[in-house]
Length: 134
Image 1: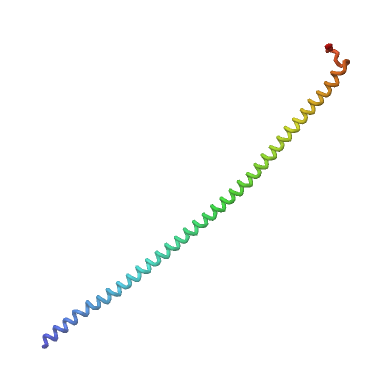
Image 2: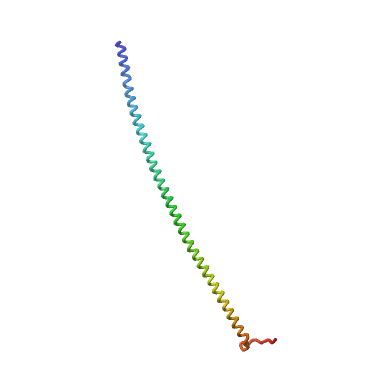
């Protein structure tokens, strides 16, 4: 019985050390899991922060692009109005010049025709002409 008691005592003693190691191993494992979890969470948060910055930058650039396009469109629209106005004014000016020129030429022809008609009926003004008798 004494031998059996010693064997049981030795058996219990031999189990105590591995039980302590299991506790240490479990604690160490838990601490490593906790550390890895914290690292993973921090990496995700940092990634989300970076993603948010990129998203904000894209939105900002997009807004700037849209604003630039609107500005260019407005400038093109305004410039086209100026060009249209200039062409319209030039067209009106050309029309007026042609009309005035036509009227002036017409008046000159009418005036010359009227003068010539008066002169042709007056023999004194036809020094170089020989009247033809019919």
